[in-house]
Length: 359
Image (tube, rainbow, N blue to C red; front, side):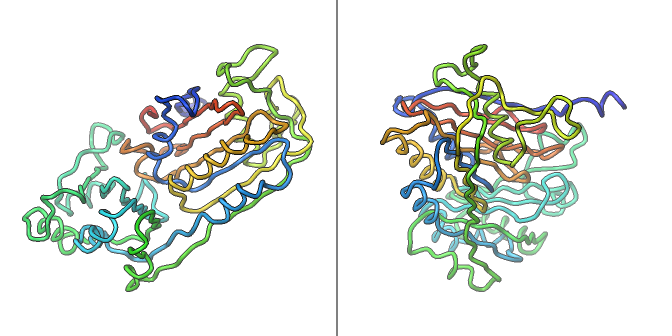
């Protein structure tokens, strides 16, 4: 038992190096398939106030929504599918539900409704699913996937009647949801869900200036770093996580609070801008931020790199794409980009105990 307590939870960190202009660059796919994001941190070394273009992009990210007591069957109706699923990217995630204890639900922009259910709810619901990958030999949790774009789900079809009956009469499922919509202006979340208690939410934005920051020495061509010359991608990822969480990186080995120090070699920058954005942030919005960081080097800068870190919801039913995400000890579910002034980039993707390898 003591040995189990002393062991560290399993985690996975995948690091890659590429160039934005390469034909086979996968940076867009990694962003677009990480659907449910709650926090973005941007670090600009050698920068005071945010550049105007980046500031405007951040301030015009739009809104997201919180809707109370929404029945899951609403997502299956023909009216909803015609208004949103067929006209853009719709995102929904059950709000304040715990993936390891509660029933959870999500709508992916690919047009799939996902349900992660405990055993009792799954058996009562009566829809076909499969055991969770992380439920052990005796399955106590199941996942159900409903293809909202399936032609067999036509309003007069038997499949629709079966799904609708299960979700409205046999075992109605009701959640609070976070909603986001990137699509045709003719489809309005506010008007469509007007019969429910719906709140429009702005993103929370906080920008701060960090003084005399010890930044790691980073070279775009050396993903694994080189002794005495540059830091590895893993060390930079760890350092950025500490900085974005306001953790002191100048500790002494004798400290009783934290012995973490900035990686070596490092250099002291007079100032750096750390901007954090919190809310229900869609991949489309993150793509805009990433593009702005690429354009940041259109004019000469004192720094050769900037960084962006994206945190996924710990209780999201998926991490990347449809890869099942299981919150056990930590719920890690995040990625970061280090963007260099020559269009090179590093991408680092991390997941926790109950997750498959990132793409």
